[in-house]
Amino acid sequence: MKPYNKNLKLPSRDLRSNMTDAEQLLWSRLRRKQILGLQFYRQKHLLNYIVDFYCPAVNLVIECDGGQYYTEKGLEADRIRDELLVELQLIDHVKKLDSFSLNS
Image (cartoon, rainbow, N blue to C red; front, side, top):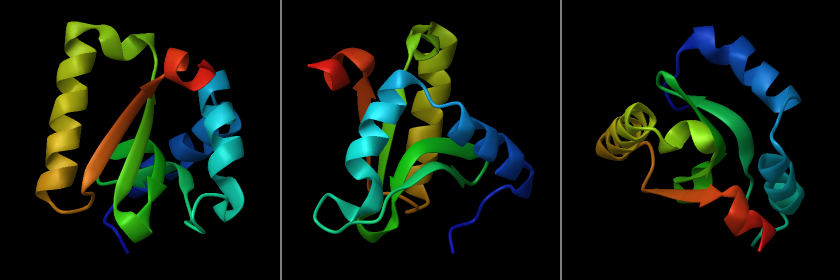
């Protein structure tokens, strides 16, 4: 089991109940092992972070970035989180998508 902050359990649950349109669209494609039989989890907590989608079989995180990530502070926090997750070998790769990518 991957390490996580137990205090993120309720916020993670809340995020699953209030997904953005982009997250809902992507989840409709990822759920029920539709892609190569891989199991994805949504709003998964890893360490002190909640990632949008996580596939443990291939150590992949998919983030649907919204406008909050395009600030200098948001971009820096995002970069730090991604580097830490990769450095600790909790994930191999982070794929970032924005709502424009999902609607294309």
